[in-house]
Length: 261
Image (cartoon, rainbow, N blue to C red; front, side):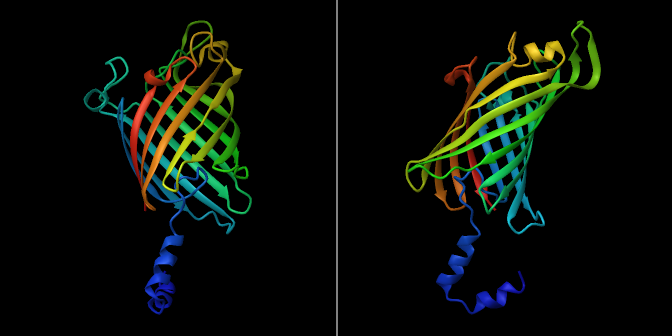
């Protein structure tokens, strides 16, 4: 940065602005890597997000870590019933994202820790590793197919014989395929639709048969987002998440503000 300052001092103001603008990433691109902070108001409480880029050691790749905390003070700020909200945190999410700038591919480590649990355990951690590929744009549409595999860990997991495995244990392995997609309405407005299909592959019988619901070894999930770019560094986004068992209006709803640092 010190070496850059003397050069900038002799550049016209317009050129300095252009140099600064190059540091701003396209926030509508699912494969964009940038340092960011976000704040969301949801039906289950407050969400917080922070993302930090890092040097991968390879000039053709870029890396980013993102941490999210979800469902803070759900009974106060959320508008769901008491059975779906608490005043404690609902879940944590960590993502490590690495993109190859030369060919439009990316890898992602995605870890979701759910404190509310399900039929398999009191609390669950799902960690997946996936590959993403940006396909050539088709008019206003861009598609980013994804495929990966993951492992599920549970606290006090329910065993096949009805006993409880005290502490943390590995319950099984799952696979996922899906897609990020973007439709550019205008330069400042875009729509995302992101479907994902998840299926258990191996593990205990209870995990394989009931992890996504009673007698459900797989599930199709949906995410819809409508976004407005306030300026190159700020956007406002509306999200809806639902699945084959929960319709659109009963699914998770949130409004999120994001700022690129």
